Image 1: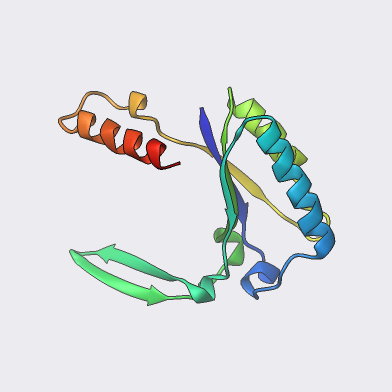
Image 2: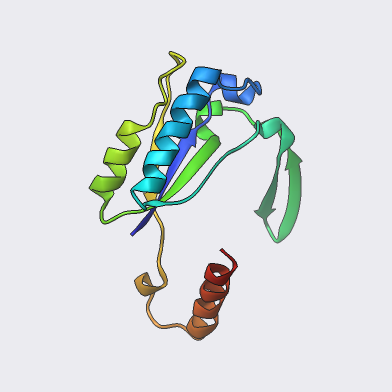
Length: 139
């Protein structure tokens, strides 16, 4: 099962503050543990929302809204994608993340991915599978 571990934004991350060297070192060690355990699929940190945009779909119209966005705690500042056996295993990995190194509050949200097997048969299922296979070949 694949899970996304979503690192919630903070006022510091939204201000563009970079993590301390100690935090970066500890995060690198944690990421190496994930990799050695064979559960790491992808990971990245995200820049502040002030450097991003949103596309809003409403009433048949598409509107672009430039950042920054309010409520840092509702924003994403980074993520890991893990392939693990259960939600409990994803939780255990999240609990080990060195998010409190700099003394700041932090939160990681854990969400399972939909897999094609979760859906009932639909007309374009074979095409959807092919897209997934093509993506896997690129890695």
